[in-house]
Image (cartoon, rainbow, N blue to C red; front, side, top):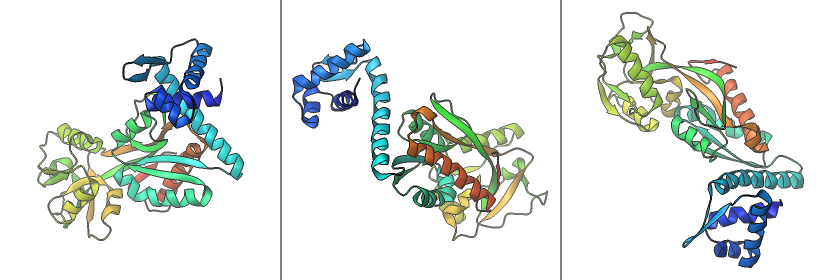
Length: 307
């Protein structure tokens, strides 16, 4: 099996046609077809099926295509590293909006300082979406919440993040000076993410356990807009302290929640080591170190490191 055969096969799958792939590769179609046939013979399995609209990968071909892409990516990065004499390539990192406000810029600065030839792509999305992107190999590393059920994704606990009541106005004095309990929060108009959001599930569960009904006046899935609504006095929210990074110019108040464990587990999730490129491995290491340094330096409030 040769690297060029892998490149040929990947291009055929991406093009969906032997003819189009041959044009992209600057080959004669018959020569390209012959190379793919040799690859199938060597593997003793059919990788492509011909249809009236072109070619499509078989189940075996689809599995082979995923692995071939990883091999080619690592081969290209190895060549660039050898040519430059230092680590190069690309790394894609996923962060939830609240996490991004605390970690993204310090992470980018540290990556540029340590690995100036590594291109970094930051993907900001909900934790569940980031897990899907990891599963489909569209990103290398992410900080997610709760846990991952995806195959070929490994996780390491990073920190536990406390949730708070956040409001633009000074809230009424709670019965307990140290904070509010869940039952007391039923009196306030709440602005929360919608139900698919993991944080919303935590809040729903807390109210359900004490038998209190929530007064949800607005559901907003975008953190920036949600915090703007809270800043304008439309209601209060329940969020980690990191959400305050999205509205530094506003005077917001945070109050602890008592009588229940309202916190979320943050994990560093990544592709398994054998599928991570050297730049992906570097990004995972730097992301973990930067996150913990933000905690140590007091820039990430309301969290307890688990590493």
